[in-house]
Amino acid sequence: MAFIDYYKILGIDKNATEKDIKKAYRKLARKYHPDLNPNNKEAEKRFKEINEANEVLSNVENRKKYDKYGKDWEHAEHFEKAEQEQQYRRSSQQQTSGGFNESDYSAFFESMFGGHASNRRSNNIQFKGQDYNAELQLNLTDVYTTHKRTLAVNGKNIRLTIPAGVKNGQTIKIKGYGGQGINGGPNGDLHIKFSIINNTPFKLDQDNLYKTIDLDLYKAILGGDITVETFDGKVKLPVKPETKNGTKVKLKGKGFPVYKKEGMFGDLFITYEIKIPENLSAKEKELFNELAKIRTL
Image 1 (cartoon, one colour):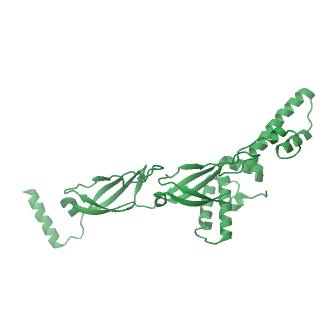
Image 2 (cartoon, rainbow, N blue to C red; image 1 turned 180 degrees about the vertical axis):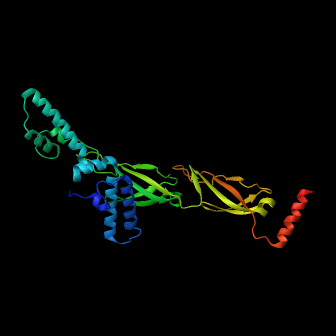
Image 3 (cartoon, rainbow, N blue to C red; image 1 turned 30 degrees about the horizontal axis):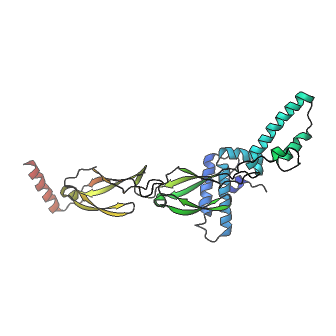
């Protein structure tokens, strides 16, 4: 496997902070995203490389392994295990014979990674593959319904079902979609963290939605029907006469879908903000004056 310089791919140096890595990744991911570069094989290749680089460098432990072992970073645990076992052997041999042959270390190392036939027990140890981490950025409108999406991870396109109601910052595990196992061991897992951008006029809290709407003075005083925009369409809402500013109304079941509970939704809470009429005509001022007189009688 040839060495891949993940720092170079993201255009950062080895002293880059986590913030630098995240900023560089998002900038390049947007630039080379397949949706913005249809039928562009070179952009698709770059997008895969960028995702792979981010998966490694955005994970603190993986980055340490990569900085130390380079292209063999995924086998860091094996190297360290081999070194620890060899140190134990060295200590045992020094206690019994007072000396240690350096060639024993090479022989042991080769047996761990496909060399001599000695130490077969070590060569048959199974290891789980490396876990992968990815971030998927979606709009709030994207996760209102369950849908399928293709995600590029470590050079592979994975078709995922995104459940409705997934939350910002939530992480889900896709079993077996990580790195390949060693010596027949199980594959690692894929951990996907969701970054949800609210592209709507609604505020989301848990599964409930909140929205403030303008209510004209006349409707607030006299009452009547208004049309309100909900997340999935318009509804007619009755307004009671003499409605006060800041009044809250609950629309049951008009909130956000509950994660992995099909058919269940939170509620929508509407807050009325009464708007005072402006640029009154002479006739309107006259009528308001008359009302004011009546109220003082």
